[in-house]
Length: 533
Image 1: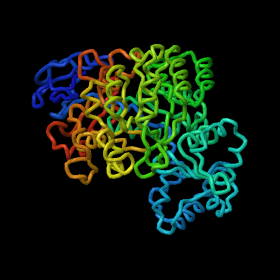
Image 2: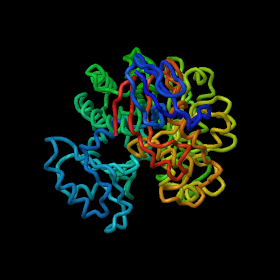
Image 3: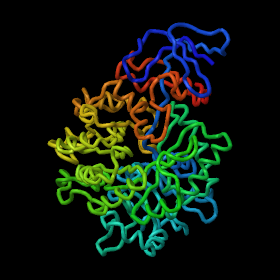
């Protein structure tokens, strides 16, 4: 098959943006790229109508199953008062399956018009619904539960090992029902498990959204939303066998303790990059700290707006070193959530160990939202991949200096500094927290403003990426962390996988302010069209 009359773009400058090309596809790969119009009269030919042909996108950090399950949850994003929330919950209750939890998402009770304080478990108990209730904050790192859930948690030994800083208490030392970060992950993992059939239904719901945005490869941390890696693996591989998985998936395994990693290694022979054609083992996911909004990300100096704390490190350096060594010695890639500079420093120290195998397994640091000159120097030496989420900037830029102070602000979301030092990087969504649209992520990385153009000129403009750099963050750069994958460079090259998209506009021919308006017209996977506008 041949697609003719197309222009080419993959984040590099070697192609003439106005020149027309023909691309020959055979057996799921790009076999030939030639200049000019249609080259063969014997092949099936498609007129590309002078659209831009580009590699399909890779999203290196998301929670895909969570995204698919959202349709079963109460959407609270529009709720602006406690009275409105109570009404929504009471109306939703009769629709629940018998014995299931009431689950809500998108909560932001700090903005409720009829409250001067935040909700607690006591407030939820006033609804007199004799079932478990779990409401997740819009950023996914804080939740509120009722006392029925708290009674479950009191008997969980592992939950009691989670630092108290993630469990809000009242003046008498009792839990209020508000939990943060690691405590939230525990509740999701242990009490909100789903069957493989539930997961398959959620995955099928989410796939069209991936393809509409030109994404054919994802790296996803789903374990907390199903409770079993075996069930998770079954869900994805059964869909692949049924011909209903037109994307490639890397499945991370979240761990909290060394025993969790040992159990995984004993029960599963596959290692990172191994699996089926479409479903592969991803990285070992480890949380090192929390979030800036909650002042739980670990900083080397106290927070500017909360000087009594500098956040929380979940592990000692020795504990983390041991986890990373164990992973590296067993051919497992590590992906560490580290937002504060102290957590990033801890991750770097662990990755500097020879036994970690950082140069072989291309370990990853997720977020790395606060850095420093010393950290950039050390990152340049060992070159782990930094997974960034530029779309977060659009909603947080005006809070950054308040959190970390003016001196550290230039090192927040320091995308250009990372690129300039040759440190591998990716752009990603953290779906469903951030925007799924890669062009919105590129907009944020290139402009460093919100969609309204604020602040004028961009926040910390010295850290703006070029369009090419941002584009490669979704195409060629993520392939570095995709182990054991031949013919997968994220570029338009002969012999590469025929995963590509057609765009309505060339990213280099629109203003940076218009990047988020570019649309995917078609998505192709393994040489077959899987989406059309």
